[in-house]
Amino acid sequence: MSKILDIPVRITLVLSVLLLLSAFLPSPISAAPQSIKGCLPGIGKRQPIILVHGFNGGPKDTWNPPNESDSMQKALNNLAGVYTHFPDDTFDYIKANTQWVTDPRSGPALRDRIACVAESSREAGGPGKVILIAYSLGGLVAKFASNLFDANDQPIANDIGYITDIASPSGGVDIAGLGALFFDTTCLFGYVQVGKAYIKQLRDTCNLMPITEAVQTNIHSLLNTLRSIPRSIPVFAIAGSVETVESYYDASIPLSGNDLFVSVQSALKDANALPNGLGGTYITRCTTTVPIIYFSFSTCDHLGISHNTEVEGVVIAQINKYLDVIHPPCPATVGMCLGVRDGDVDGNGVPDRMGVTFNPNTPCNVGIIFNQTCSITLHVALDNGDYIEYPSQLTPYCFETCGFTVGFLGLTPMNGKAKDIVVSPYCNMFSCPFVAYQVRNGQVQQIQFLGGSGSPATNRGDVGFVCSVVSGAYQVEAFSSVSEAQTNNTIDEVYKADSSGNMDLVSSKLISLSSIPSSERGPRCSGLSVPS
Image 1 (cartoon, rainbow, N blue to C red):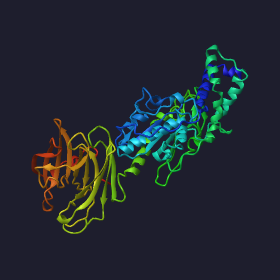
Image 2: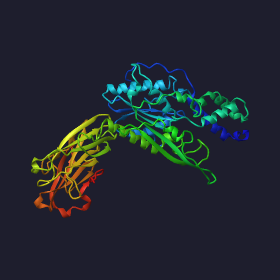
Image 3: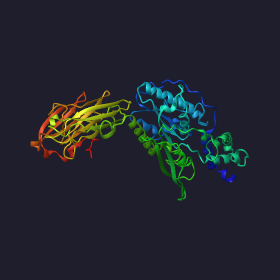
Image 4: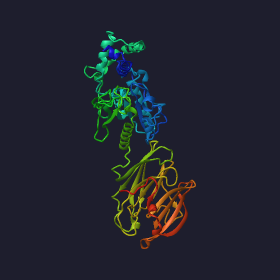
C-alpha cells in the first residue's frame, strides 16, 4: 500500500477528494435570523435568482470561470426578466465552506439572503419569491436554509419559488468511506510514507478527519439530520454520469451511475415534481479520456458539470418554464396560443419574451367583412420584469364573407434595431397580409404605415413584403392585391421608418403580379415565417 501512495499523483488525488469532503465538518448552531428589510433597491419587477456555489470554488469560479466563452452567468444574462446582479450581490459562503451547513455563514446566511431579496422584490412589485440554483455542497446549504424561519417567524420556504440542484450529494457520498479508511491507516497510525513536499499538506488534511463521517452513506451521518426540502417547493435535480474512462493505452473502463464523486441516485434524491409541471430530474452523460479521478476534463464529472453548456441550457429552460407559470405567455383563459418568441422588443439589448393569443369565440365567420373584427392579445414580458397585455382587433383579410385564420409570424426589426411583433389576420402559402406592433417606452402600439393605400393601420402585404436597411434607414416594401377582380394587379409600396417609429410612404406604383419574383413573395423579413 505504501508503494502505491508514494506516487505524488495518487496522493494528490486522495487529498483532493478529502478536501472536497471537508465541506461537511460540523459547526456551531445556526445564527438567529436577521431583521427583514429589502437589500436590493434596483431589483425592479424581475425574477430574482440566487446562485449558491459548491465547496471547491467561490461564485466566480463556479458560475463564471475565467477563459470560458460559455458559463451559467452568461446564459442567465441573456434570459429575459431575471435578476442576478453578478457578481456584486452574489451569495458567497466560501469562508465557511469547510464547515457543516449549520454554520452561521452558510445555511443561516443564505436564509437571510433569501429573505431580504424576496422582500426587495415585493417592495418593487415583483414576484416576491426567489429561484435558487445550487451546485454540489450548495444544494445541502439550500436544503438546510429552506427549513429555517425568518425574523418574523415565517417559513423561509414561502420566499422560495424554485430550486435547481446540480450534482448535490443529497443522498450522501460513498467515497467518504475511503476517506475514513485513509484517516485510520495514515493519520492515526502513520503507516504511509510520503515525500517531504507532501508532509505539511498531509498534516493539514488529517486535521479534517471528522468530516468524513458527515456524508458517508453507510453510517448515521450529519447528512441524515437534514430535513427534506418542503414539498411545496418544486425541485429540479441534475446529475452527471461518466459512462466510460478511456486510458492512454486505448483501453476503456466502463462506468455508470456517478460523476466520479456523487452518484446519480444521490444527486436526484431531493427532486420534487409538482402537478403544474415544475420540478423533475435530468441526467447528463459523457466520457473522459484520463483514468484518474479529478484529473479528467469531461463535461459531466463533478468539477465540470457546473459549467457544462448542456446543463446550462437545461437550467435556462427550467427557469423559462417557471416564468411561464408566473406570467404565462399564452394564458389559456384568454384564448388559443398562436406562439411564443424570445427577442429584444424594447431595444435595450436584452431579450424579452412574448406570446400571442387568439379568441376564437368572437364572431369571425359570419357577416360582411367590414362588420367583422376578431380579438388577439399580445402578452409581453420585458426583461425588466414588466408584463404587458395588449388586446387588439384584427379585420379578416378577404373580399367576401370568409373564415379567419390568424397567425403569429414572429419578430423582426421592421422599423429599427428593436424587434417588432408581426401577426397576420389570414396567412397561408398564397396570401399573408401583416399587421405589426412595436414596444416603445414600455407600451405596445401598432405601427402605422402612413401615406399608402388604405388607412395607416390596414392589412397590407398579402402578396409579400420585404424588410431591408438602405443607407442606415429601415425600409419595408409591401406588395398588396388591388381587389379580387384585379388579381393580376398589385400595388408595390415602399415605406421608410421615421423618428416616431412609424413608416412613411416613399414610393408607390402598380405592377403585374407575375413581375414579382418568388423570393419576394410571402413574409421575407428575418425571423418571420408562415405558421404551419
